[in-house]
Image (tube, rainbow, N blue to C red; front, side, top):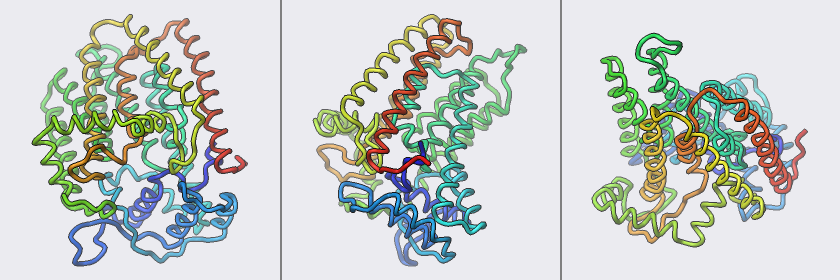
Length: 444
């Protein structure tokens, strides 16, 4: 399926790979474009990698040129690493902790060391990132077999497209599911003895995944409530110290990039910090802004459609009947997951409440983050929103309403196998047909 997607066709992919190339060369933080610049906005990437991205952007977006994607990819096979670098603006990636780029940076560094072509380097890096995501998903699903709604959200065209692209969306989805699995196992662990006693490594892993997630996606800051819940459930000085360190590091990183990054992509009369102060001082105004954005016919429809899948640079459209069909599947599976969950004991009530609160708060923070970074003040509606930004909050909600027990009855297993297989076949068929129709690339 990945072979149907040309290089650099996910909207954030360009800045992600540029940033990964910088990290692979030892530049963990952004640099100033000039010594007298007021803030940090970019860094130095390989010239041929930059040219490769520029070539592939010719077929991206509504103003794309009439050039064959296959021909562009073939041209990339004839160019190797330039080993000379040029400054590029990647301010949009400033908020992401360098750790999230480890698979990308390793892939590009190995490719550069072996002097592979641009296409081979890209294919290898994409494969490394994708297999990292699949390994994390395998770990997550071993910890907690996913309910059908979770599977649907992971397999729907937009999620699958991002997993198959070397961005950080797939990694964040997989890490969130690992975090949820570890949390549920730890929450279920008896206080003394038993088959799965609480252990320090598990809480440390929960804190580590939480740190990477909240520093890679600012709207996921509410996930800090998960280790807090486990701390309250089973208090210890070690857990308290780890939680305090986690909060300090997460908030410290967020504040650091907020104060030091200069993003010139949008010309505004207010700085990000000024708009943050305005909305925090008048939260009802901000909630009204969220409401007006959702009520806007164009923006509301776009969010619903792009959640399921307006792929590429918002230029690869899934047919409307397929979008309606996928939404119907998601709604039906939400009801099914809730029905199964009602059979479980009330011991999970608090955990479900925390997961639901994280989902709601993360959703609101998506609106908040875009309103303070991509919009000026005042605004009548929030611009820059895309449906894919809400996939992780939706997964949190799917976990909250679904069954949390590891065991499945034979009837449940048979139902999940049959429904899950049919759903996966339908979703991936829609994805494959859409990609081939848009890019005309053969899989092999």
